[in-house]
Amino acid sequence: MERLLNIISFIILLTGLYTVLNISIFELTDDISKLLSREKKDIKSKIKNQTRKKKEKGIRKIIEESKSILLIMGKGEKINLVWLISIILFIAGTVLSISLGNFFLVPVLSIGLGLMPFWYVIYNSNSYRKQINEELETALSTITTSYIRSEDIILAVEENIEYLNPPISEVFIFFLSQTKLITSNTKLAIKNLKPKIQNEVFEEWCDALIACQDNKNLKATLVPIVGKLSDTRIVSAELENMLFEPMKEFITMVILLIANIPLIRLLNKDWYEILVNTPVGHGIIALCVLIIFISLGAVIRLTRPIEYKS
Image (cartoon, rainbow, N blue to C red; front, side, top):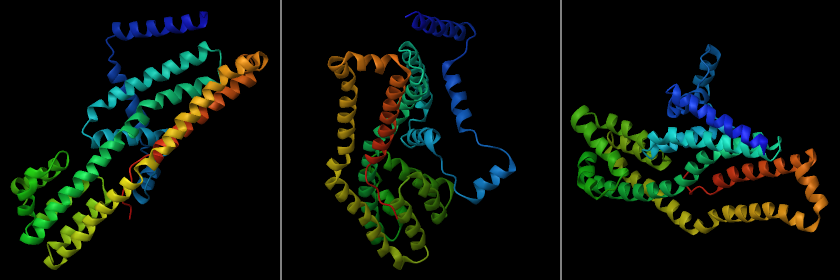
């Protein structure tokens, strides 16, 4: 109890120092974010980045993925809030582990709870991605039909822009603005449109559309490309319940695992004392919590909506 009071006193003192020194917690989280995202500036690292595709791994991959998702969703301003919640949960995990007297649990629980906001962003993006795919299918289908008839992509977009919904409509409004106010080069405008939506079918559609500007006979290739979105939607609908089965099983297993601790106390108090009061027991609890967090990350990856991959 005395240890817990000391930790709470330290947190209050730290909060007071931030207030007196007029240090913004959001500036702190922004600095931490930049620190973790910082890339090496030496020549060797720059050459590696240019010559091969760099793949993020582990914790940095989770953080970068959640940041990119927030930017795609148009909620980039909430990155600092996610970092703030992460730091609070990190401290809470540390305090809870120390108050339980389990020092093996400190790195596991603090890092695991600190990653929870980023996992939440990734998991919550599933419904957003599904909505994007549905809106994208409708938009490309109507625009392609109009383009095949008129052979003018600008006219095709203008005819259908009022029937499109955000955020897809915003992407094609950007395209119209490019063609009317910035450049008369339609191929360049389509090329600038391509990275606006992170979807392989959309990127393939843009490439085919660029090719159509030189050869109108290639417009027939657009219909099969749009059809890939329809096939993906049908498969996704059929497997929707299966996609959430891993999450249901995970929640069930976590409840059973946590429920075993009070159950052991009821069955055999000596075993319970070994579990909560000895280094071996502390190590077992820390290992179980580590497995829970690793499983949670794996389950979130498995429950993502189905997308077309070439």
